[in-house]
Image (cartoon, rainbow over all chains, first blue to last red):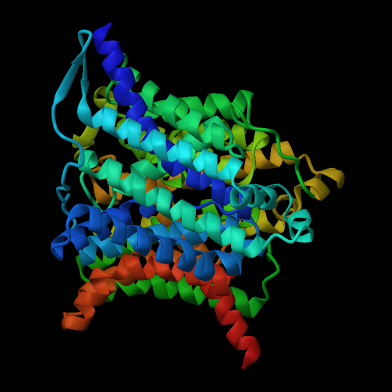
Length: 291
Length: 321
């Protein structure tokens, strides 16, 4: 029983990080119809930006802030301007291919330019294990869960309660109507790209101390984020959250009780079940087929 | 069948084939090996070009089909089968796998399909790595023997190159023939507008499944040749990253163009080896290290500025001249 609780807590912590990456993914899809296959690299690059900052002698908080700025500019604004804008009218597939190219280029640029080896990353939470009513939970898991939870809650409040966030939602639901109402649609879309980049940088801060910084770390995170988003429902932010947590927890349980070797297959199994029986995702709405 | 080629064009094709057959005579062992590899990958590339370029079904699991074909033929040959029986068996297994993977394509499209095929690749790779009793896990299958044909051993590098070249020629002819039949037209209709195709009486379910099964068949046959060519297989060449590379090679060459795979695969695997072969000044070393970065950027540039791939670019330049 104690083991189970421990598995649940660490599963939720991992899942919350998946959810952070998946959330940005869903945001991009909602407002601009962009499928970003380089989402994993959007987590990997800030991790290396932070390492570069640390190497320059910055303390971690400053390095993190610097990486947020760089991420917002490069992975948010420049990505939208250079890659997405010319392609967004051409449909979904060209963007998929272009972001795959981006992911390949980013990965190998880091491999050649930085290092092919895993780089250690400073711990952001105190090491140690707490004993709560006989259940052992690690401080890092609880810390990750709290930070990711706070970020997701803040994002939710921002989108549902502020004028800015509501305008973003309006653009996602009906860009023409939003434009008629005087909303700066292009600006709102840019904002979602920046938010996506910021979320990915936060995910990098949470996940890199555990996984280490490696040029190909984005592959696993990107995949899990995609699957989390689809399992939960591609057009629902709550869906990304549910999908991420569900995935993190089930992976942990499967690794402990079924087979550690097929842990990575859990996401797939869930995904296949979802697209066979509920293609719109657990919380999603069906999208109509357009001619 | 003329396949719409004039007599002069047929002669040109023949001349290229003869040139390809003579080329290895001036090459060392490694050069012959790379050319054989190119032939094998072009066959797999034709398959992906059919599924994705012509029928418009995005497939990010091509390396998995390739791997299934390679493992199936290697294991059957090791179990005592003749290669020439193992080859169709590997193809049949891949067709079955292609139908299974194509099934979700009937329910979902576009990005969902990308994820479904990508997931299939991850699963197949986990299977190759974890099921040691069958695949040898990370140790792989060693000492895969090359077959003999009509009593002549294909063990030599040159002999096996000719086998690969013959395979490529046969697969290319089959592709050209298929594209000239109503099937080929129906695939294009499926890609361009599935709903319209359906209203014209094309059974889009059957054609979607056929597109996947055919693509898988090509990949499986290519994989069956890949195993004896390299002599040793482990899970690494069948990883998801190689499926993505396959797809990008098709895009770079020109998706939905017959000669696209020839060019795209050459850019993907021959060009970096050629760069390595040039005895290196600092510049070639840099070019070689940054090759994959450049390839990724090239893919992006292609989609943004030139969706027809390098072949489309060549056509555009010719028209302008």
